[in-house]
View 1 (spheres, rainbow, N blue to C red):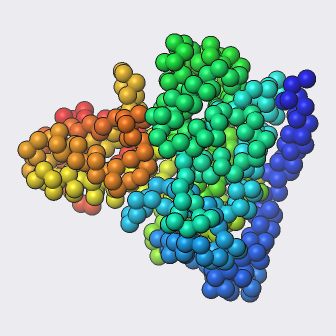
View 2 (spheres, rainbow, N blue to C red):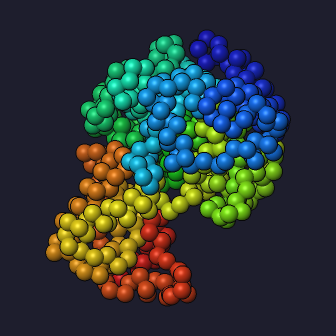
View 3 (spheres, helix red, strand yellow):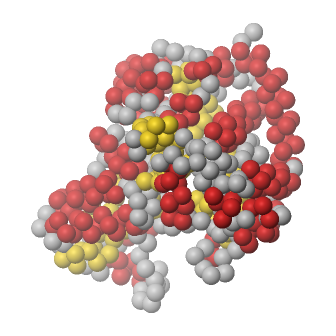
Amino acid sequence: MGITALVRPIFNKKYEQLRRSELNADDEQRELLKRMIHEARLTEWGRNHDFDSIDGYEEFRQRVPVSTYEELKGYIDRMRHGERDILWPGRVKWYAKSSGTTNDKSKFIPVSAQGLKDTHYRGGQHAVTYYLHNNPKSRLFDGRALILGGSHEQNYDVKESLVGDLSAILIENISPMVNLVRVPKKATALLQDFEVKRDRIAREAMGKNVTNISGVPSWMLSVLNRVQELTGQQDISAVWPNLEVFFHGGVAFTPYRERYREIISSRGMHYMETYNASEGFFGVQNEPDDTAMLLLTNLGVFYEFIPLEEVGTDNARAVPLWEVRTNRNYAMVITTTSGLWRYMIGDTVKFTQVRPYKFHISGRTKSFINAFGEELIVDNAEKGIAEACAQTGAEVAEYTAAPVFMDGEGKCRHQWVVEFRKMPDDTEKFATALDQALQRINSDYEAKRHKDITLQPLELIAARAGLFDSWLKSKGKLGGQHKVPRLSNDRKIIEEVLALI
């Protein structure tokens, strides 16, 4: 009898518990909020907002403001320096490095010991539980799990304060028992140089019986390509005949789906989406024939939602889970056991059903490109354009940018269509300056551009004068307050613009 058969009864019991949780989500959320307020009442944040006197959600909503990273940054910075009892009881050791804001290259999201256990690790267990229920013939635990990870480093030279990618934090703190059934070895998983890392991962994994893989689609594809190179096998199923599932998240899978199907021929291969961010584990695709994800309401995250059209307005009002409606875009607001209080994460969701609550990630609250995990925002783009203009003497009138998911050579990049008011002396120099500026400004873009492994240098197309006016006119939007969208996560707008060149 294999390991999967031995542990399946445990996961069957967990599944029954999850089913009850799905139908009891509203009460679970109320109880969770009550518990978090009680636990944090003696923290600086709890005292400042008089948590001792809060009785229920309505008082919580009135007393505690919705926050962005900028509002919490001062508290988090003190926590990173070792201060205790600031946003969450005790000292928080770990901080997940995430994409930046308008004012910073990176964000540092606190990950408490309680958050690690109750949110991130339990979220992974939930994903496995649903997968095993949906696949009764699975032999998931009879082989190895290939799990990609990042790296971490000391925080401000403060003992017992560390910062790194969430994946590195998870690997560093995972049970030693799990390390017995995963590849690569811990030292390899935590290497900083991704080019060296992916080669070592491929070499360590290609001779193992890998049954499941987990990671961001773009990073994992790079590792699988290296496995192909080393083994001479174009079909990953020939290398790992028992590979049965890819637990993926971080970026949309749609642009990668066909490529994965090309290199993994097994008809028994499954793909399961998860919504696991630095701030928490929020959702999982619990039914294989439904692309919507189930909101996980019992993992130390209290949810609120602001109708997207109200975001940034004076009358913006967050609603709790039990007040959401289907087919409406909401900005997600979270309160967590790591000390994020009414924190606007930046993602937008649309519920397809309630009780149980199922949703799609519908986008971001601002214009962005996140096709490969780079999370490029408009503020990054504007600063990059300004630096490139300063270096080349150019002046930019209009621009738009979008991802090229994969060209004929399997290369990925960002494509920029730029209308210059004053042309640079050398457009290639402008493109290089822009690319380098974006890497300095945005740490996630810098990571994806590292040694051209995930993203190639950006492509610049110099537009004719008046091109963007022509596009606005074709949309009936020339003049007035209408603007050219700067960044798009798909190619709809840029293809319309290119058609007019």
